[in-house]
Amino acid sequence: MTEHTTSDLAIHAVGLVKSFGANRAVDGVDLTVRQGTVYGVLGPNGAGKTTSVKMLASLLRPDGGEARIFGHDVVRESDAVRRRVSLTGQYASLDQDLTGMENLVLLGRLTGHAKKGARHRAGQILETFGLVEAAGRQVKDYSGGMRRRLDIAASLLNAPDLLFLDEPTTGLDPRSRAQVWEIVRALVAQGRTVLLTTQYLDEVDQLASRIAVIDKGKVIAEGTKGELKASVGAGAVHLRLRDAVQRPEAEQVLALTLGAEVQREPDPLALTARIDNNSVNSNGDNNGDGDNGGDNGEGGAAGRASRALAELARRGIAVDSFSLGQPSLDEVFLALTDRKAEPAPSGARKEAAA
Amino acid sequence: MTTATPGDLAGRKDELPPVSTGPLMELLSMERPPPPGPLSASLAFGWRSMLKIKHIPEQLADVTVLPVMLVLMFTYLFGGALAGSPREYIQYLLPGVLVMSVVMTTMYTGIAINNDIDKGVLDRFRMLPVWQPSTLVGHLLGDVLRYSIASSVMLVAGLLIGFRPEGGVPGVVMGVLLLIVFAFAFSWVGTMFGLLVRDERTVIGASMTVIFPLNFLSDIFVDPQTMPGWLQKLVHNNPITHVASAVRGLMEGRSPGTDVLWTLGWSVALVVVFGSLTMKLYQRK
Picture 1: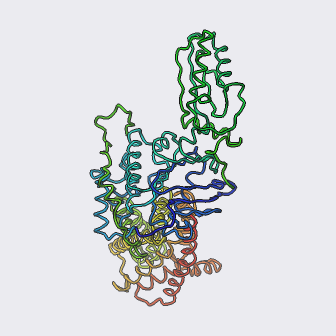
Picture 2: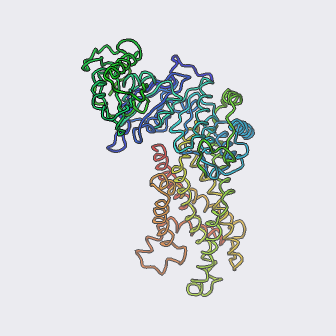
């Protein structure tokens, strides 16, 4: 459309607060989302994701802080915001008694199309989303995947510049999830912005270019996937021995060469060590230079891991299998929500501003 | 519904073709039309109410079967005792029972709104750049149709068993119109409950607590003259009494000016008080 803003930010929120009674559901959330990207908001149930999204989408008035969508204030200019955004909530928000077609025609008329135009647009959408056959059926007879698809389709009726997807794949089967992902990718390929909340890490891993991790109403970490992973550690070494008797000795070797905490797995042959970027190869003393590069060179994870292997071999400890991996976002998430009382180890993490 | 496993691809009922990105591009590149005005938005929501009636015609039982039952029941139950014969009693009773049924129907506006919130549809509607109360007005438009159906059905049933209004067609039509105006205003009590309480059952409970005593502590069933003085005072100040008297007067061919004015006054007051309370609650949601 013709509205132009001076910045290229789709979302700019500072210090959003929302309380329900004594419960501070959102407690000072800052978010900055650039246009044309997928932004992931990750957090467990009850972290404040939905409440944050509702405030950004102008459905809930914040108790504190402010948010601008394409430069428009969500409270004072809610109509301007609403013209350019759509929200697909956690539960399909369509009229279950009406057919798919009727739902879309209704929404078409409510976005300003004349009756005929609304029909045309509804038909176009049903076709694009492969729902023509289901068009005449009541939405309550749709499967979960179809309903979610129609819901997202309905959200595209106003050709939004920014789409909020609040847990769009919760409760969907793997196939339907993949289809939702496809739609998100297609949208961003068209230069639209998507803000996605989820409790599934693989979802943000697949889709988002930047991620905010929310817990207890606060942003506890923000950055690119790589930054978030690096902030937790360069990776984890998984080791499987041939002989369980040698495990205590192997544990010692790993602790010494990797300078990392070593965990005994339930499997009596297996050991796991998480390598921290900042730890060096002996006694865990910290060089503190915030090197996030991680996986090559002397102090890098791979270098340290190969030294550990050599040391194991020298001592005659037979190794059955060995792997070094980047931490999964799962590990990142657990680490973040566990340790957030500690100061941030790298620039990628930040404590939520009050 | 079967849950999918990656291997389970054959013959799935909800198998959906992939989303085509070419058409998606076209879809997104449209010019946004200007948002609709309050009237078009309300009419679109009214159309939604009609569609709901079309899809779930059984919900019309409340405005067809129940009212007829009430007419028959009260006419034959009380007729002989109160007026000498059912035929004589129905001349007095029918306009009142009409008021009673329609006022009871107003409860459904609240239930419908409560359902919208519950199902999350309201959130979608509130994201639209339209005059916000139009959702509620749309429901009320649908309900006006319901009131008209209830009134027609009861009048037909009454005529069949001997109701002969002296006001003729004009009197009856004016009576029904006045009742619909009042019911529209009274609906805002239901919408307020619909926004205020958590679930459908509580909406029904709360509405009945208001509607039941109002209906019975009125002159719908008997002339208040035989009641004790304190009760007469109550009955004469009950809005339902004014509405029932006005409708009865119009249908009997009298010109019940005072009662009509009272009815219109009550209607304005209801819209002002409960309409604005509803709007306040709606905005806060």
